[in-house]
Length: 135
Image 1 (tube, one colour):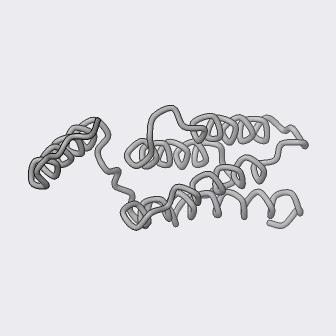
Image 2 (image 1 turned 180 degrees about the horizontal axis):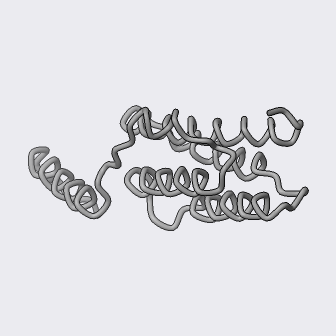
């Protein structure tokens, strides 16, 4: 059975819960130079992007989401490509992660989740260039 509570009490409780989550997973800081100065065809930069995306998604999305496995798939494909596997494709795991993140965008998390989408776009574009043989 539902209970009637004061709006002020409800807001205070929600703020307290949000504060605990922010202390556990603080809002990640990523600067423009961190993004635009990297060579996204290198494995270490794909791993860096994956870790930044993980931090952002941990901050905004519930625990145990499907996005965690998608990030691991993205890293696995990057490692395969680094090891010379011609069949490695970063585009597919990046696209599936983009679709999952797009579904979770709200007005409160739009800025941070847009950064995740930007990182995924950069990884996809470099992957397409490397597959087509461009320099």
